Length: 124
Image (cartoon, rainbow, N blue to C red; front, top):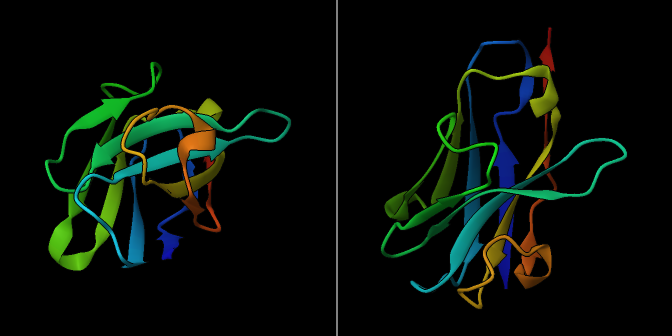
């Protein structure tokens, strides 16, 4: 069992930056993928970024690469999402999740555990 708690969301203006954190507790194996998803009102939950827990390999959604950076601190059991040059269309609830299968990074159904989400609102 893994518990995830996100933090760092908020309201900011377009062009700004924000760093989200996801604190994990429970058993996390090196092969696990830690992912960030987001969901805007009326839209599907979409993949943002993922990172393998041990090696730190990363993968990004098509529209996030270059603006968002995912990282992890194994000692703190925490995953981060640095978001830069934010746009109003980035407004959403951002969720942290764990994929124990180690594959299917972009597939929501591959993730076993989810946090409660943190709201990010970007004004124009």
